[in-house]
Image (cartoon, rainbow, N blue to C red; front, top):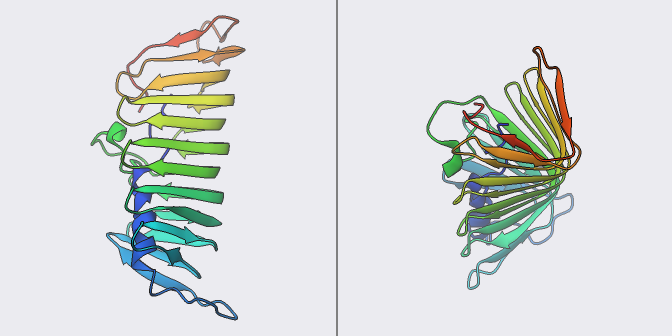
Length: 221
């Protein structure tokens, strides 16, 4: 169950861009003109940003797009946060495509990975506590792995990922369905609970049990 990269620490550059764009963004424009700023390897484009340079709070109430030279792209209907506290919330049609497949997370390790895409209604990033939450129609794709759930929470310090709400995982010919699932991104161990069912090719085609299904490593890349 390869979902350890489900949320993206690299998105915190959006928060930093709030300060960078504070003076560049037009107050009013008709039709709106897009402003852009370069923050590290990312280029952020939007039509309006409000920022408090003293507190670090920022708000981008219009569509936000972030691009990187390697083809990575982040989009959302709006964003809020605090670049001093390294916090950001992306809301509305959130889409994160990371060409490296790591999203800048500790849990991703250093191995080469396929490009990965995460979509959700809301994505919350706290790059100080290393806690990341995707909420609402969460969908993750990387290689032969797809994950669907209503909510995903990653603690990138403990490497624990929790999924809840109609969890559906497909990895090649193997599938897992459950109400909730947890996964350790380092050990590959996990547990699926609540109407849990696994289907996989072989002599025994499926396992369905009211008790939790315990998953053990090795990790699925």
